[in-house]
Image (cartoon, rainbow, N blue to C red):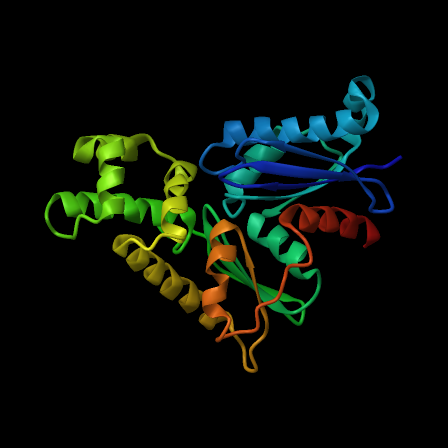
Length: 284
């Protein structure tokens, strides 16, 4: 039996689904982050881990060893817009067939398949993709250091920046800012955190912002809304097409845009999109 594997990997985790030749999903598996640009070694290990786990569940440990190199795989990964990172990953994987796309592409295909629409994927990072008449156009998704506006990592970083500004007397020390400052140990602790923190670490603070009525949180959410709206507006054709919001922040902020665009539900997840791509390659 030929097995197909779809993998969706980002800064927070790596998820996979294994299907048979009819597209029936047999097993699912999860592992740690899989950003192949920021941490390629961990990404490779986690990708192999979900592949092996999914196979073990389906055929047992012994048979899984033989099936691993026979897998036909498509994956959408954070950092896959860097060619060198993709080449390094390919060198470490044993699969007979491998298609590597950005996680934006698999999110798009999971949400829309071949239909028209805009996907605003806003989780740990953010990226915006339009599919119109079969043509795909992507913007954003530059990573939390230089971009990813509106994302969890962006919100968390902005929150800690606001904490430092408040400590200097440049902004109001709201209850939220005070609690975060106390938790991290003031300016020194915040700065030390920033030296070693990764995108997912910053994104953990976003949970305190999204549903908060703290003035600092409201200011950050207003800015996130404006940034996300700017990206979507740039992608909108005339007449406008529907928008799908994905990710923890995306789903939380989507209601703010209900009076601007037609918001629709995704057909499936990024894992579903990766699996669809794996099987499309065979169909073609």
